Image (cartoon, rainbow, N blue to C red; front, side, top):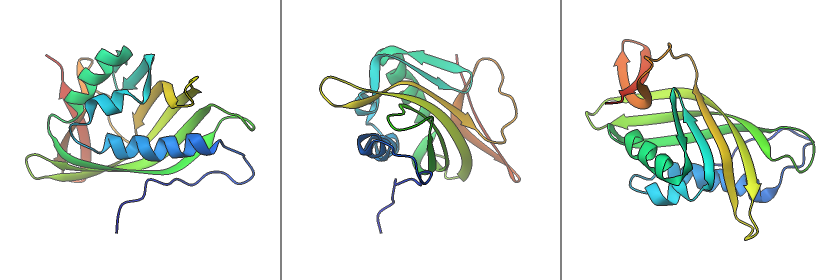
Length: 166
């Protein structure tokens, strides 16, 4: 059975179906190795992407960050469990909660809870993109200041993700 990227939404809040579909497509792309350009297509040209202590602004920096996210990871599977639109109908900002499972190139595996904040825009072409996306990993200790999210190190029951920048 194929993995589902569908999320649960709060009852009684009308959330744009195009935004719902965007997140399903986004996480499927996020889990596809080598889809760096397609991943960046999900952001506006001037978007801000924040992963732990690393901030990427604009397409080129987002693509560079994305390459780093796959450096030590062989496979990943996001499960965006719940999405909470901020405000009433027409909301374009959301908080998200989910789990991501990793398979490392070294053979290890790990799973981490995450939360995120996203600001969506719908372009003149009707395509949904993110203008802002910040990811928080749940239960992780503080990162060294020059480190990036996404290399998994498993120590007993503690999972920690750190890729140190050069």
